[in-house]
Image (cartoon, rainbow, N blue to C red; front, side, top):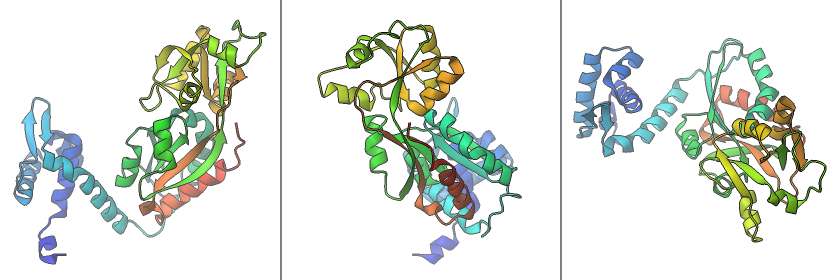
Amino acid sequence: MSFEKLARIDLNLLVCLHVLLEECNVTHAAKRLHLSQSAVSKSLMRLREQFNDPLFTRNAHGLRPTPRAKALQPLLEHLLHEIEQITAPPEFTPRTSDRHFKMALVESAYPLFLPQFLGDIFSEGPNLTIDTQAWEPNTFEKLQSGEIDFGITGKDLNPADAMLTLMPPKGIVFQELCRDRQCCIVRPDHPILGQTWDETSYLAQRHIQVRCIGDDRWLLDYKLAERGLGRDIAMYVPDFNSAACLCHQTDFVFTAPSHFANYIANQLGLVVLPLPTELPPMAYTLFWHQHQEKDPGHSWLREIIIGRCRDLPVG
């Protein structure tokens, strides 16, 4: 380690570069940094000298990062997060804290988990902010970089997701919250009601399918394909709520995790049927990065989430 080189590094310049990489616009970066555009432009000139690279080129929409700048971005995010942790207070007092926690959740987890712990969180920490976003293919990367604090998804929802969640990247820690099974939702006057409900009649229906993390097929479809079977998908939609609403207006069958299915069926007056084909249960799991393990605020929130969700019944 060269302390002489480290002593010449201006942390303010690294913060400026981090914000420029996020905004790709000098005006927006200056506003976030509470600096003038001229000051940000001067900092960018010094950064170009520091890294011996232009870092950005101009285009019609603002700034475009160079390959060198793109390579620096995840390193900067990790470095600045670690510096933030070093300078953070050693104690966390929920009652007086205004901390901003970020979470990524798969859509079906919203009605199942958030009501379990939000009341306790805001009762103890009335000024906290919980910032949620969709679970995406890059969620583990966001956990590693410190961009988000927690992620909740269902293992085995589709094969690509299962591969990641069963063997998450190095440094990712996890805790199973509860298990769930798939079931089916139909409208209350669906022709299938009152008839035999088995795998044959299930596969004879037309289905509505949610694209889960960009995948058109779920684990169910792959399990059926192993036996030379398949569902007749009539329509693909981007989210669970849309699928349930459309299911109410059509004869489509919607297959979804049972906790979500029972919740939305109660809201929309739908009928829940069992999935008439064998499928292993899915495990809703909480993920975080090991660098957060000793953070007092993170530990406090983590304990509330796990404590309030561990006794949820299997769907």
